[in-house]
Image 1 (cartoon, rainbow, N blue to C red):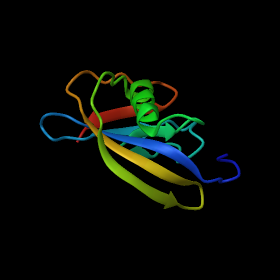
Image 2: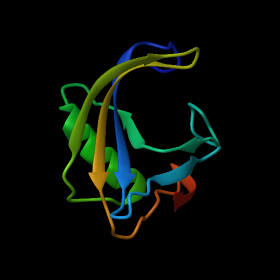
Image 3: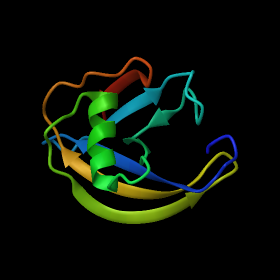
Length: 112
């Protein structure tokens, strides 16, 4: 899908703490899209037949270890550039617990 730059659905979750800070992380250099760049949201491709909110919960837990949190739906938005085309289902969630990166996805992170 990404190799052919086909339009797809993706989830995007911004994690905020009780001080209003956002968790910023660096994508690993092995990522196929935007390797090594900073990212303010955890997320990824919504699986076929998957509800976007379910995909968002799955992705934020996989990437950052954030689990059992409520999502606030910010609504979808379409995005396209030379690397990717998708409808982003955007969410924000509160989190004051520890962050546990998935080493294949994240190489660094901190609250900003």
